Length: 182
Length: 165
Image (tube, helix red, strand yellow):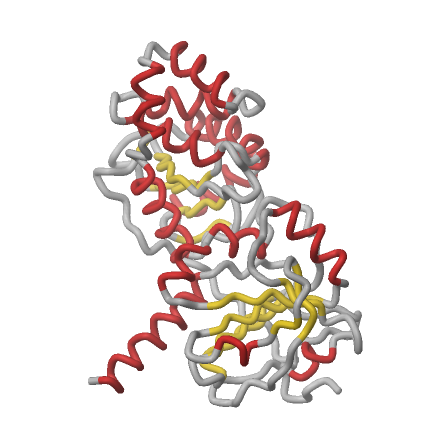
């Protein structure tokens, strides 16, 4: 056997004005998360990323991109498109947080209640999602991710290099601190 | 026998074969898809316990493979019954081939068989004529993703354009 080649995947889609960004725009470290709202590993990483942003508030910003694996997560695409519809109304991160805090309530009925809780018009959002108005945007994130070496969810890129370590807070802090001091 | 030179390399003709496949139960092999690029994805075993499962990822990436008219074939030493249950649980609709009897014979011919009795995690892209265009051996526990495959498919499309021009 030849020795396995270890090629570290690198981000190919730079951050643009269309991206959803949380944290200071001039942060020295950018984490890009490719996530699936129905993926329990993404759900497990969510509070850690939250705490990471709190503890490294001046150092790191988080960019979220959609990577729904629809064949195993039947609600993931709809959740992503709903987040994008909320984003069109300036409430992407509120919707993102609600989705990760209610991963057992992503069916259409409960999702509508969540939309309403955030003060958004559920019927209007439902209509847009039914017409797949945000499907292209979600797909663009997915395709960019797969071309960049996203191999499952969550996949994080820390300053454009795929993070192959864990998603516990100490792992994330170490990755961010290493990138900040690089 | 295992190929002493390791994983099959670009430029070599792809060894022909057919194997039983699921979900459709037929004999399936790369020659049936001549004229299209074929991606052979050898993997150790069904039932990897994470969301980051490689075959599941390739199913999700199906529309991108379609843009290249590429056919993806997953291959492991699992039986058709294991493949069938695995495909159902992951919503996989592309063929999973069963390299079950004689065990691992096809994986060996591609230099993608491990001593512990499983296929290696290896990717082989065949061009439209059945010649190996690209191959990649990953560590068994590392999902290689699909970026290398799509780069290889881009190169194939570019080469064809040059030849046509």
